[in-house]
Length: 298
Image (tube, rainbow, N blue to C red; front, side):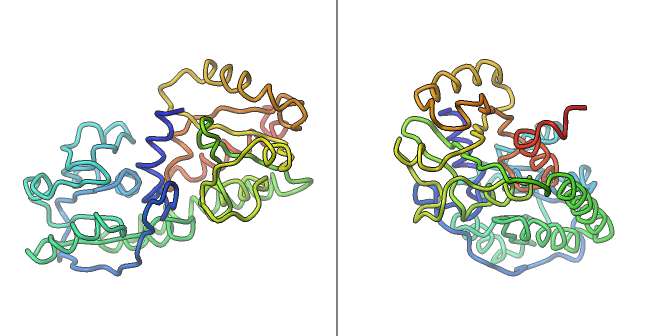
């Protein structure tokens, strides 16, 4: 879980999503700052941005990506320009980009401003919620000369989600407790894109309105929330079966919680559900499979 939490802090705070988890800064809306006439050498400073670029078919034009960019597999072969939190301007410039795409939180905003001042093309997008993902796809398509492909990508994702919503939208909504970490116990609140994923998958967040986006909770709230399903994301390369064993052992102390009583504790691949990107449908479908497994039995 420690590894998962670290990834969440890194990825979900773009993405990370203006995430106020542990006091992370909110992203700030910014328009396109300085676009080149043509984008033939593109640098991405965030993993979700990298995924979008590849989904737009720009593999050959991507010259460097953030250290955390590990999907699709081709991203691992690209030069690296520092971490999500600390992009390295020297590494960025060494890639000789004509377009650098950043997110809107402070560190990356500062990078975009410095690059703009020296004449480098920049585009800043915010991807904190589902609607912003589609806006980012549109902006990135326009900035890279791939608007038709961007339109197709956004339309395809929306169509799949709409079809899934029709499938999972009927009947009672399962109450979901989304666990960020166990020690101390911290969960996803309602002002998060995780909450949006839960709702799109036909569920309801078992946690009500909270001050923090990812609030710590005690045993009393665990019992009070009455969760029908408990979901713990983990890393894709970890052993899911082993992680589920540990999760079941941990939650066994809460025998009267419906999710525990009915054995509805799920450990899922965190890599899929931790980024708002082209794999949005896969994220929602993964969650829906936990909430209404009977619909996905085949």
